[in-house]
Image 1: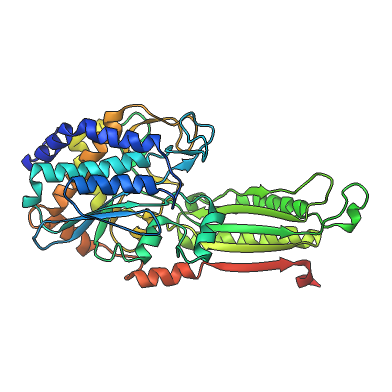
Image 2: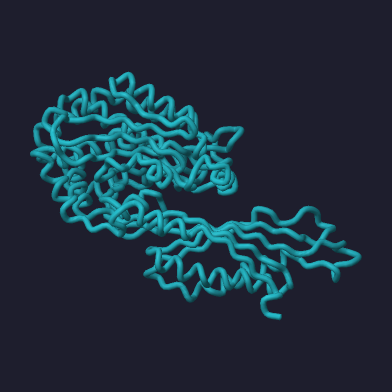
Length: 445
């Protein structure tokens, strides 16, 4: 530890005393992975642990999610520490759920353990008596933007309004009493901590090519091959790639989820999904128009029809600079400068980006894992680094923010400039991203 103050050392000592318990929580969640909006077991586990700590949890009846609040009794900003409940689907990982394919190959189990461990350290240390404001602990569902069709079905039924967990909880009012948020994320590598300058936002596209079925051997001339139309659309997207500027970090990565029924019938229905990612939403929307033209061109060339349904994905993550500086200072206290890697813009996406458009947020990265995120090579290599270092980082940032009358937190809020000055403006923007368009050869005569 380098130049850590007395209160910080005290909470870190309490976290060390709970080390085995914190790791056990993370490992329990690792062994029982659940997909987004289905994480009911994990949600119950988190709620039960907060009850055991003497903190009343708030839960939903229809979706997973836990919010527990600790009030210092002194006026000050409200800080949320977030953990994500869901896993990804990674069927070729040896530790995946044999039925669902779910696997914690993105480290969300580490986040939940760190969130709970921070609460434990806060309560055990008595640090609460030295802080001002409120601390919220929020376990959110469905950060991984997967199983789009199923989530769209939940939306049609009125169960959810948005397909990502944080936008959904934002719409339900769980962030109305929160001024800033923070969480950790796992990162492969040989450092204890990593920082990043931000990452991509994206829009989601569901694409249906509609053709005409006929006998593939005897009467192909009577059909309209939807698969060929889709292939032309994909080729057109690939031809656009040299127009993408490096500084915009554009990523377009479609998949075909339905490619025909049987080989002897000209396919009349092809389904595709893709994201259009970029460093800003303006660039995302510009490229999205190009992608639409490419997809429409495939349909028009073959005389098919293409239906394109767009849905909001996530905003680019824009970490707050004051929180980043504070985080880097705590990292140095825990490991020294040699234990930190400073990254630039990364091209993944997270719904922490949506929160960052409204309030100050930070998502530093902790090491202790190896392999590739979302892949079969992912492993927790050092449980102490993975689970405990991130816990100490979160608690150290919290102590700095809310000590001395919450001086640092007030500075963060005073200097923060949001993209949207109210969540209603944010929702006005993303609600317009729900669109449906149809293109066919009839449009050109």
